Structure formats: structure tokens, C-alpha cells
Length: 234
Image (cartoon, rainbow, N blue to C red; front, side, top):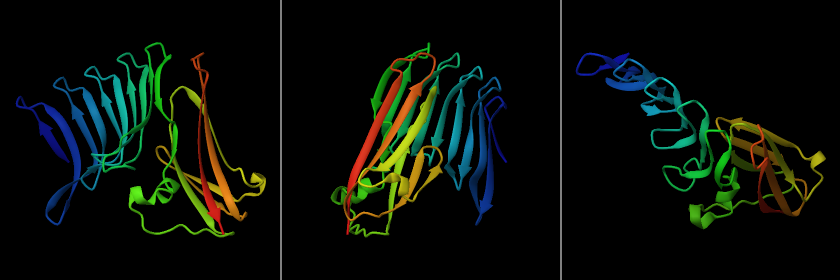
């Protein structure tokens, strides 16, 4: 473990590491402290890159923010807190979909009483078929050719809004969904991967709906977002 000290000799940080080919590689947990010895940050490194949940604290030790990171440059999800502990802001990022860094795609801001002050963006986006249906923009050369019996893949980022009960529905509005073979896989923190077997020739419309019901008499009581796309089955 590497330890960092300030000029007065006080411990201000620790970093777990490994030695690989003679080089020091940060691997494992890190901790940072202020000059009073209070923990102000903690998280994890994987292969020299920040990865996973990183937690930051005010100088008095109270929770300040939680960021779920893919790397030091790409943040996947953020939660910010007021000094007294109430949720302040939730942010969902686009996972670096449009560039190498990632940008906010949805945010919700609460006041200190827990009421909603502002909502920006959509709480759900599709990130797999979006690329295939916009090949020129994403510089994709291969075509998607789907037949009956093939597996359709679609992937979503869905916000984990605090103080809300969430429901999520996926449907192919072109068929009887009670007969659709569909599987979902959750990848922390916000990604849902979906696979389903195609059974109808021609145009198929896939629609996904996410609904949030807010607690504690928050207005608006509900937030509903929908995303859809069309595919052609041969």
C-alpha cells in the first residue's frame, strides 16, 4: 500500500497497488483524508484507472456525492447531496455514446425539502439499435439483416432516480407479447441488455416505457418516458 503525507507529516491518502513488469499499477481501494484526518474520498482502481463507485465527503465527513465511474474520464451515474444529507441532484450520463468522455443525458434537481426543482432530458435511452439505425453518424459499415427466428438485441440506459418507485416495460407492439421470448440482463449501474426472438415478418416496432412514482407527495407525482424504434424482419 502506498501512503501519502502532507508537509506536516499527516496522512492524506492511501492507495493499494501491484507491481507489474517493474511498474507500480494502482489496483484496489484508495482513500483520501483532509488535514483533520477526516475521510473525504474513497473508491477503487482497476489497472490504474478509477472504476466503479467513488464516494466523496464534505470536510466534516458528511456524504457529499457518489459517482459510478467507468474510468477517470467517463462517469456513468452521479448522486449529489446537500450538506445536511438530503438528495440534491441525480445525473445519468450517456456512457460515452457520442464521444470519448460521456455527457449528461438526464438530470433531476431537488430542493432541500425533497421537492423537484428541475428535470432535464429523458430518463431512458436506447444505445445499441441507435447506432445501427444511424450508421453514418456512428461510422458503422455492417448492415443489420434480421430474419424470423433471429435474436434482436437492444440495450438501454435507465435512470435510478432517488425517492421514486420505478417500473419498466418493453413490448413489440407488432405481436402478441405474451408469446415473445425475451430476456433482460442488468449491468450496474444503469444498463439493461435485452434479447428477444423475432417471430413476425415485416415491420416490427419495439417500444420501451419507464415510469417513476415519486414518494412523499412530490410534484409531479409521476414521470413517464418512452423510447421506440422500428426494424424490418425478412
